[in-house]
Image 1 (cartoon, rainbow, N blue to C red):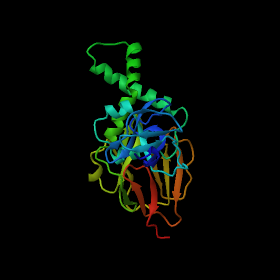
Image 2 (tube, rainbow, N blue to C red):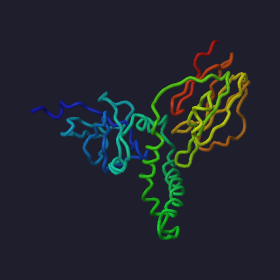
Image 3 (cartoon, rainbow, N blue to C red):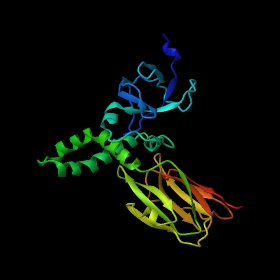
Image 4 (cartoon, helix red, strand yellow):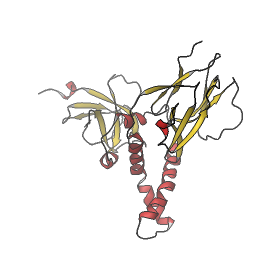
Amino acid sequence: MDSPDDAPYFCMADKRCRLCQFDLRENDRVIAHIGDRRCSMVFNLRMTDTIHDRYEWINLHTCARRRCMMDSPRVPFFHRDCYRFRLYYISDTLVAAGNYTFDPPGLEKSRRSHRIIRLLAPKLRDQLQIRLPDELLMPIAGLLVHKCAAITAEEQSLGTNASESTVELAHDLYVSYTTVDGVRYVKSLDNAVSKLCDQDCLMLLNKQGEPIHKIWIAEDYRGIRAVKLCSADASFAGPTPIAKSWWRAISVPCGIENITIKSDASTIYPSGVPC
């Protein structure tokens, strides 16, 4: 019989459930997503350990590091309850949405949890047949935070494929927004209104013919919060309305003609700039 050491190895991508996007903790019941609709058996998470799955014939290394000495493919993990509560198959877009640009601040988990509770409690009040006081309603909402977050992540990923597109800044540019867990993010940028007309919020970001020399981008760990285009190489002074985020600038002396964006607007960079 083959030794378990001969089975292929996979490394834990990070300590975050890619469905609810909350932390995975020691002894949590978890599942690893191997790909092609394949998942591991359910097991209790033990960090920096190697778990052998005799059913899928794989080894899971729970390192949760960006670089590991095992040099094995990195796979996402889920809470068992979040995985069982899901409505659809796990898509590549859903998995990619939990691959943050950088780790969130230490207090963000608590802030996000409270935002979800505040959003969920009124909906529970409307659905329940009896009227409960806030002292009972809020704890009930607290028990549903992870499941609510998992369903929100699924809905956000529906009909979206990971891709890149280029928009021209010399033409009208429209931006659409979406709200995730009570926080507004840029959903997409496009030169045509028709492609974005089904979005919640649509705004004209730039008019045709206005030269662009600098692009200011506000982002947090989950994505882009706001985009501002400057016709001159001006500084972005004063306080901003985007809390808990940081601003970075893209500037080209001769002007920016095109920008390339990912389908979820998580990344923006200039392309095709004739300098």
